[in-house]
Image (cartoon, rainbow, N blue to C red):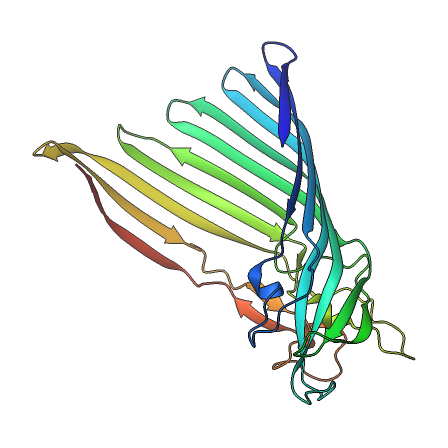
Length: 293
């Protein structure tokens, strides 16, 4: 890994970073739960590049960066329970060449409007996709190759994480020791969770290349209050705090599973009625007293 930073002038600093990492797959993708061991697993490779700039002038600070990350030769496993193979029991398919490309723009801004008022804002615009189709090798318990499979992954979006997000925070300090922050978060392009092994290309059938279901965008508001008490006991400093999460009690889909195995309705077409959804936490709060010795 390496990087460099250059001072363009008194207000602007440009930077660039590059990284190349090679690592073995995680244990679960090499040794299966029944003790089956993959033979000569391929190392996973990560190549990352980032460049951007920092701007600071007076009470304003802005950072912007663009990133590109290539994840190559990711390894996955899939249990097959159709009785194929010499054992007649569960066999294992090892998927190789599961490649992804993540790229996007990230922006952070900070402004101290006056002593008692501060604004913070962030924005993230990402595009995370599978690059190519993948191959799978069926192994029996003795690690013998029983067959080869292909999986239609090219150009499908990576799921289980919003690829677009915004945040805006406003912080007030009306008196010494008191901080009140309202934080608004917005999330979009939140594709359902799914597994590459669900896109097996069946002989004689057209491959399923439909995008997974994308959950509706949503926003929520959180409120954070901290007050450093102006008294101390035996030299300790005490801070009272209160946090209210999802202040407006918004109802939103935080996570979803595409074409759910257990809760899909009708023909599986990557539609809302095929998804299993998990709603976000309703409004809740906590409060307490922190003591620093």
